[in-house]
Length: 421
Image (cartoon, rainbow, N blue to C red; front, side, top):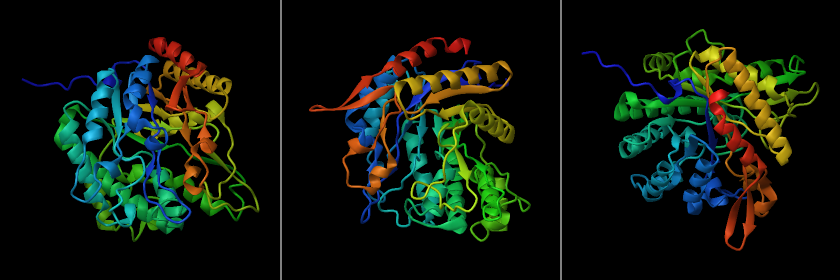
């Protein structure tokens, strides 16, 4: 008797509305740079049960949520799942479906060289396998690496995060090692969980406008456009000897290893797109050079829903699977946030009506967060607050309170009407 695979959550024809909890972890520190752990900054480690209840209370059905790898394995060969056990129990008790970020930046403190360590792929595979063995009977949806292009840029090209490599060669080295770990992690999870597992690959939408054709920018702009998809292309077996960035990957990836990627390719079930209207489009200016990233950023251009449509269509066309808005918001007033929530969901509804296979929408984050620049100052966290959430973070004698604002009310109403979007 032939067995048929059960229909998965994203195949039911609905638009699934979700939320995320900011989960950036860069635990390494050095002179002038503090370790950053958003769960610690936002007190999620203590308030996780309250946070999951808040997500459920506004009608979210899915929650993008990450695991602090560096805390799970505080020393090589040592595994501590105590907090993660309690958090996952509380999350599932709220009826939420977690899409687990296994890697949202940051490696364990004992891993010298971080993403450049030759043993990184083996270590991250072991972490993924152990997670799946422990939770795979209840947790079925995984993002092996959140935003690999941002990992590779910040750690490999901009020298902003460990291991502080710089330039196109640094980007290629980090991208290649991330891709190796990505493939090994997904294959390990699939071996443990079986065909019930679903994989939501997530990357950042990035585009470039302005004087990108100026002689001093032309080559860099073209390289950046191409490498936006490089890690996803590698893990899905799309990079061959004729790929536009093949030469830039050498010697980080040999011809024999290209064959390995193609033979061991892993595919997304859903392609997630992270798009921020005020940050996802960078502008080149004639006669002006910027190194990129937070340290020396290019100006941004707000392309609004036009940029979101372009990003969703580009990822859908390139990877030919359902797509999902996995992160979006604006940092601004309540009115500005509500306007973007309305405008972006209206666009998603319109695109679905036109036939686009968009299966989900995640507002990021559930509550405010603290800007990554906190890492580079000695100022209090309040000086780095980003007003992005459905709930305000409010300092009090009892710690950080989560105070709902009108964005939460609007999200709740939209979630109730999601079946019609």
